[in-house]
Amino acid sequence: MGMRILITGSGGREHALAWKLSQSSRVERVYAAPGNAGTALIGENVPISPEDAAGLLAFAREHRIDLTVVGPDDALAAGVVDVFEDAGLRIFGPRAAAARLESSKAFAKDFMQRHGIPTAAYREFTDSAEARDYCRAANYPLVVKADGLALGKGVIIAADAEQADAAIRTCMEDKVFGAAGMKVVVEEFLVGVECSIHALVDGSGYLLFPDCRDHKKALDGDLGLNTGGMGTICPSGTVDEEMTARIRAEILDRFMAGIRADGLSFRGMLFPGLMLTAEGPKVLEFNCRWGDPETQVLVRRLNSDMVPLLEATIDGTLTDQFPVWDDAAAVCVILASGGYPGAYEKGKAIHGLSKAAFIEGVEVFHAGTKASDGQVLTSGGRVLGVTGKALGLEAARALAYLGADEISFDGMQRRNDIGAPRRMP
Ligand code: AMP
Ligand code: GLY
Image 1: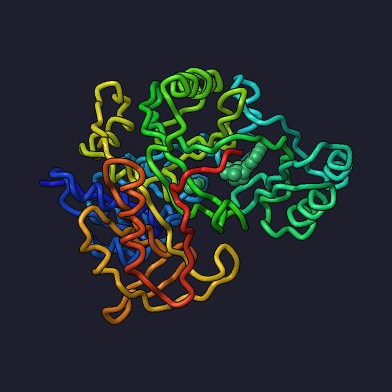
Image 2: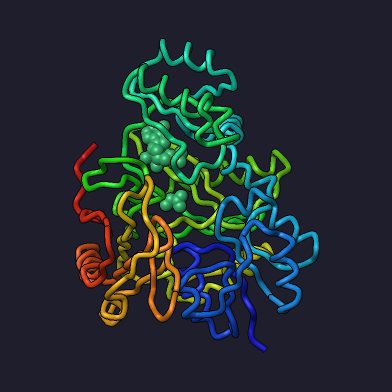
C-alpha cells in the first residue's frame, strides 16, 4: 500500500510540498492540516491547527499516517516533533530544543559566536534603558530584532537613534510582538546581497539544495516594509562555485560541528538566510524549516522524488541521496492582499486561476485561500504564488508574470521586479 502523508500548515510552502510529494509513485494520499484551497485540490484538508500536537497525533494514529511533514516554525517551537517522535511516529523537522535556533535570535547569535559562524556583531538586552543607552552611542544604520518569532516582522532597520528608540519602545514597552519582543538583539547593519540557503540535515551530515533569492520588501525596488517574502528566484544568480565552497566550509560545516559540540540533535531542513558581504557570507538568521516562498521554486526544480530525501533525513542516510535538479530556472511571484504586511481584508473572490494554470510551465501555489461555494476566496496576507519554470531566469520570470497577469482579486498587490536585474548595493 502507498504512503499516507500529513503536511501541517496552510501556506504556499505547504501547497508546494503537497504538490511535490503527491507526484511520488510511493504516495497514496496527502492530508493537510489545516491546508488551503490549493491543498484541497490535491488531497484532503483536516481542520487541526499545526500547533495542536495532541490533535495531530490522534489524527495520524487514526489515519495510519506514515510520515508527517511540519511546515511552520511555531509548530516546531511548540514541540510537535518531540510529541510525534516520543510516540514512535515518523515526522520531518527538528525537535524544539534545536528549533530554538530559529525561535530565539539570542540563542542563535550565541550559537554562531561560540562556533565561529560569521554573523553581524551584536548585543542582546532585556532592559529597555540599557538598550537605549547602547543605541544612543552606536553607529547607524543599526538593526533591532525582537528575540522571538514575529512572522518576519520583528526586525527593524533603524536609520538613526530616534528610530532605534522607537523600535525598542515597540518591542519592549508596547510589547507589539508579545513575549517575543521582551528581549531584543541589536546588531550591526550588513551591506551585501541576500540569499536563501537550504540544506537537509540528517543528524550527522547535510545535503545542500540550490540557492534561492527572496524579495522581502513589500514594494518594487526593495522599498516599503519587510514581509514574509514577496517572491523568489532559483538559482539566485549570486552564488558561484567559490561562494558555495565558502558557505559549506564557513557556515554548514561549522553548524554541524556546533550541533555536535552542544549535544543538540538536528534532523530536518536548515535554511540559513545569508548576506553575501564583501568579507564573505554572513548569517542573518537560521530558519529550521522550509522557506516560504523559497519552497515554491525549489519544488519546481526538483526533478527526482522528494519522499526518499525526507526519509533519509529522518533515518540519517542522506549520503545515499542524489537528488536531480532541473537546469531550468524558477521564479515565484506572490500575489498579496491590499494592505499586506499591514491590515488587509479577506473574503475577496479570486479570478483567473484556471487560465493561469493552463499556461505551460506555470504552476500556481495557493497560500491564503479558502474554497467557498465553488469559489476561491482570499483568506490571508499572501494569497497565491505564481511560479514559472523555463531555461534562463528571464524566460522563467516572463512566464511567472504571464501567469500572474491572468489572476485578479479586489485590492491585489504584487511586486513587478521579482528576478529583475539588481541594482548594486
Ligand atoms: P531576519 O528575520 O533576521 O532574516 O531579518 C529579516 C530581514 O531584515 C532580512 O532578510 C534582511 O533583509 C534584514 N536584516 C536582518 N538583519 C540584518 C542586518 N544585520 N543587516 C542588514 N539587514 C538585515
Ligand atoms: N522567505 C523567508 C522565510 O520563509 O522565512
